[in-house]
Image (cartoon, rainbow, N blue to C red; front, side):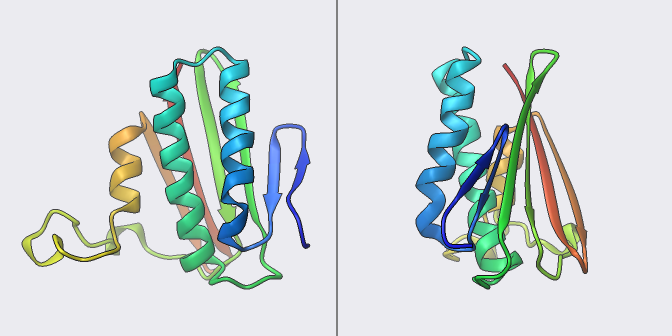
Length: 139
């Protein structure tokens, strides 16, 4: 896979951060078509960017044969987005608290914290077969 592929409400990207703009355009376009307020668009765009960054760097570990799949749906006045990778998975309980004194100056480790702060619901399904993070935000 050497470029993003869009099919309906799904975008599949190569494991490379240079395609993050394609994901942003796809997600923001969908949300604006739904009439979402700009503050909601911004919250979701930030959250999806954090999740895609995590999927590329930590999930698929930049492996070109491990695409990232992002799906967006609108139902019952809310939008649900899933970001899936094919990496080794992780234990969400092992994520260090970014507000702990020893973590305040670290350059990384805030992505899931940010996503949880911006979204109404966050579900992390991680296994040795990859990770799928599902986020939901009311429109």
